Image 1 (tube, rainbow, N blue to C red):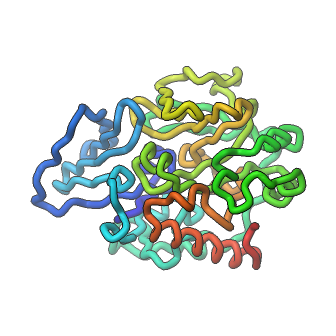
Image 2 (cartoon, helix red, strand yellow):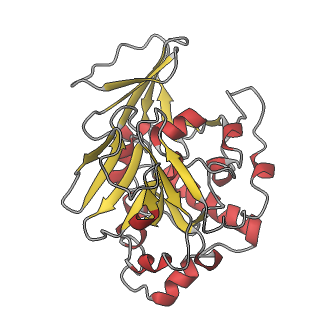
Length: 327
C-alpha cells in the first residue's frame, strides 16, 4: 500500500495522504458495477469516484499501464495489506504524515528518487498562530469548491463547548469532559483550531482511504471567496446524507471530501485538512493544533496495523518536539 502525499492527491482527497494499492501489471480489467465519475487530473492519470457519496474508488495511469485501487474501498485489509512506501513528501513542505509514520520508507518524489528528509522538515517547533485578521483559502483539486477560513480567536472558540461526536464518542471516558478539559486539549491559548485523524469505518468508506484528517471549526468562521457568509450550495459542492446523524459534503467533480456536519452540532463543522492551502505546509500548523494522543474511531478501525502505527508515530512526533504527548 502506497501513501501518496503529493499536492494533487491531497487536494483531490481532502486528506494529508491517499492510500492506494497497485494492481500487478497484466491484471484482468476491473469489473465495475455502476458508473463511476472520472476526474482526469492530468494527461496520463484519471481518477474515479462514486458520484453519489464521493468515495474514491480507483485510478488509471495511462502512461504506466497500471490501475491503483483506493484501499479504503476494500472490504478487508488486515492480513491482506501492509504499509509500503510514502511518496512525494517534498510537496508537503513540512513532512506531512511522514513524520507520523517514521518506520515507513519515505521518498521525496517517486520511490528511488531520494529519501525524504522529513525529520528535518518536521523538527521545528509548531509555527505561531496566524493573526486573527488572516484568512486561509481552502480549495479542492479542480477548483469547483473553494472557500475561506477565518483565523481562530478567543471570541469564536467558545463554540468548542459543543462536544464533537468525532472527538469524544469513542474516547475511553466519553461524556465526562468539562470546560477545563477543553483548555487542556485546545492548545496555543485557543488561537488554533483542533485537528485530528479519524479511522472509523464511515470516514474510511466515504473517503475511499484508510483515514480522514479533520479540523474542527465554527461554521461562522467559514466564508465564501467574496467574503459573504458561507452556504452549502457553492460551486460543485454536493451533500450526501449518510445517516440521520450527519451529512457529508464533497466536490461532485473531483471527489474531494470537504465537510462532515453533525445534525446535533449546527454551529460546528469538520473541515477536510487536505484542502487547506497554508503557507507553513500540509499540516497547516500555523492554523491547527494536532491531537496526538489518540485517533478518533480507533475501536472501529478496519486497518488496525496502520492505526496502531499512527498512534505510536504521533506520540513520538510530539515527544520529539515538546517532550510530552498532548493528552
